[in-house]
Image (cartoon, rainbow, N blue to C red; front, side, top):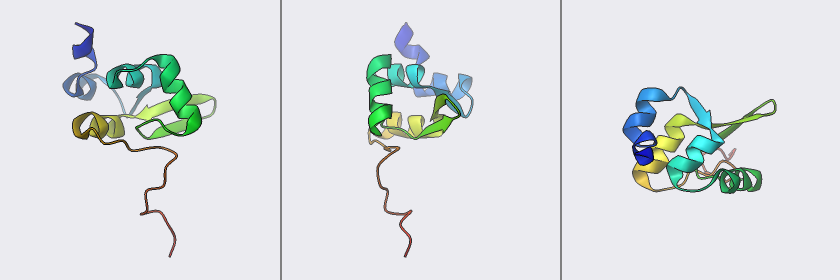
Length: 84
């Protein structure tokens, strides 16, 4: 069963600190193409890191999104990073 591969329990057991956009997209229920489109628009529901030419999804952020159902947009404003 492919869905079990992307369960929070399986992700915790098998992923390092980051995962691919493709795998994170599948865990969230959409295609690789849709995932990269959301990354480009800054609307991927998890924190995304750009490392050189590579784009990685932060595993802890993905798990929070999967468990809460609430997005943590990479390009969005969070309010707690605003200087006073």
